Length: 323
Image (cartoon, rainbow, N blue to C red; front, side, top):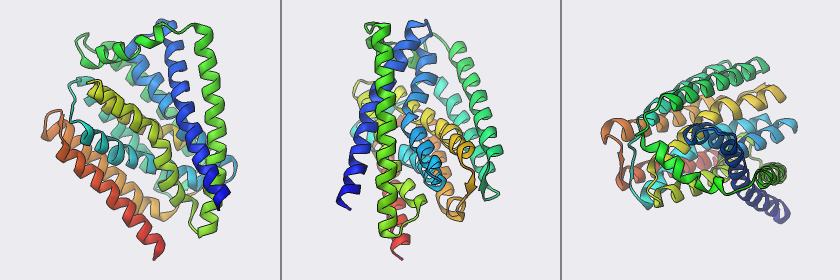
């Protein structure tokens, strides 16, 4: 058990460290190609921050543990809203001003609906996987359109411009090196994490799904948590919220889609009756809080509500296991 716990901790550490290098490298390469900061932030950075979930899901699927990949996708979205947004708002209240975020949020809701539809029949097939990946391409095209048509006065544009200043000073060779090193660390971290988590699940008689919803989902959401807190401390609230919205959309389409193509599998009924409804509830609650109720303001009271919802869900999950 001690060795398996070490594998999980080492895997999570490599994922966090590798994700940071991977994001910086990918953003710098895109910057050197003349791509606008807004497009880089909404697409390149969004995909790169979902890389830990994608690689963990892919490794799990190659090992025949697709249930773990499904749990990772759904659990990460729950953690992103409840833990990441909730904890970030507790650190410092958020004020989202970008109109682009509202449109991206609607895209995330559509992606969530597509994810639910493909899982409704109780099976994640290769056809479902191709539907999800095709939807991902369509979503990326829509986001690029949003970025190109966004107002120059959109706060998100200036925030990404400021955030990507570091990328200007990194040489092309250094960027590719960071990308390659980051990818290797992500692959190694994913392998260690999956091996350790599966062994722990088997030792305690817990399903792969539950491990994906808990240990792995929380662990792969840590890069988003760190990025969001750093963004809000630099008064870049739009990036903090945008990171979560983008990550959740990519999780639904890419983190579910890739494992489905690699290793189709049956979907646990618990996903549809317990976990997906919680994810939908938190997604709608976040949208109502940020875009309807408070007109972009996200204070500590609202953050505490989301955070307590996340804690309550984790308690419910573990109480169900122990029962």
